[in-house]
Each structure stands twice: as C-alpha cells, then as structure tokens.
Image (cartoon, rainbow, N blue to C red; front, top):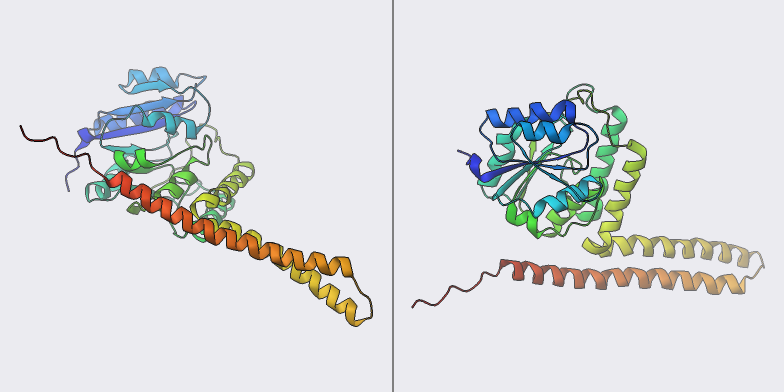
Length: 308
C-alpha cells in the first residue's frame, strides 16, 4: 500500500536530545517525510537549533513533561495522520512505514511493540519485567491487552487523537493515551518494531519512581474508565476485612468471649464493602451510557447546506 507521506506529520517531543535529533530529522527527510514537527520541553542544549537547521518546525512548550508536550502539540498539528516517536534515537525511522500502513487501512491508533524485538542492552531484565507487569495490570483494569502500553512509538489519525481527553503531564501520558483509545473504542493495531539502546543521552525515566507513578495511573484512570473494577476491588477488600474480623469474633464466641462492639463493626464493614461494590456497578452503568452518548455525538456530522 502506498503511503501519502505529505499527509503525515512526524511529531517528536524532545528534551535535551542534541546528540540524536539531527540524524533523526535527516533520516525522515531522506525517506520523503517533509512535515516534521518538534515540540521541545525547554532544552538546555542545542536541540532546538539543530532541529531547526535540519528543517524541522520547532515549538517550545509552555510547561514541563512529555504529556504536556503532546497535549500542546495537538493544537498545532493539521495533517490527517500523525507518527509520534521519542527523539532519543531508540526508535528507527525505518519502522515508519509499518507503523503508518494500518492507518491507511482504516485503523485509528497504532502501537509499536518493543518488547518482543528489542536489541540487546536496550531494556534491562528489570525494565522488561516491569513493562510486562504493567501491561497485564492494564488488561485487568481496562479490559484489553495492548502488548506495550508504554511504547513511545505510536501513530494516529488526527481525528482519533483529537477525541482523546488527555490530562497527564508526565510519563503517564502513554498510559492515558491507551486508556482513551480503549475507552473510545478506537480500532487499535499493534506492530513489532525495533528498539535500540540509547546512543549517549541519559534516560529521563527512573524505573522505580516513574514505574510506581505509571501503575498508580493505571489504577487511578480505571475510576472513570472502568469504575466497577476500581470500586469493586475496594469493596472486596473492605468486605474481606469484615469477614476476617467476623471469623475472629465467632472463634472467640465459641471460647465464651463476646465482642459486641467488634461484632457491630464487622457487620458494618461487610455492608460498607457491598455498598461500595454496588456503587461501582451503578457508576459503570452511568459511564457506559455517557460513553455511548459521547460516541454518538462525535459521530454526528453537520448537516449539508441547502441547495440554492
């Protein structure tokens, strides 16, 4: 399938990527992608000058964080298709075509899967294990397994990207994009891509700290996207605490020891847990209704003007 490269915006969020951004822009230019847009996070090195000298359009984001860069960039992008990748040289321009082909076949969102094809040294065993854990947690919380929800190599059609209600400013943005894609019932493709070791620039991702933030985001975003899971888990744990306390009360009762106050508290915990679970069920019904309504509204087309 022929890709209309003039309809594609290569979007690169950057922060201190001077050693790699020039070669990255040149590589895309050589393969015919002339619309290259860089959103820079106030780099302290020559990233901006190098990107502009190679022919990229560069804007400076108003705040910090990769998420903010993506959110602000959406307002500038006008091309019908968007290919997004990090500027650190870990993703290859040679994979652009396989990322874009599904869009021209009708998909809304494409995720580049690094985890099965990464080069030696690109991911440590700890990072690879952490990515797999987060992917399975995402499946449990949001109902779909996307193989690599933290991938920074993605492709969108502009319409699907604009429909996403993105609010995360940090590295949690990939998680939120995945949540919005699943919640918006977008047609998602996953393709294998190459992933190289960083060629000299220090990583900005702290595995433990940022991993904890991402896991927190998976859980937190489920409150809106999948409330029956979010409140159901809380309700089960509260009820389980009540049941365990009840076992203790019953055991002591058979020993001739009564715990009146604890018995009342046990019943209250079980009831509270059940009520929290039921709240999740009701919230899930409301969210499902609102999602259907939003999709219908987004699908409405403006009426054609009357023929004069």
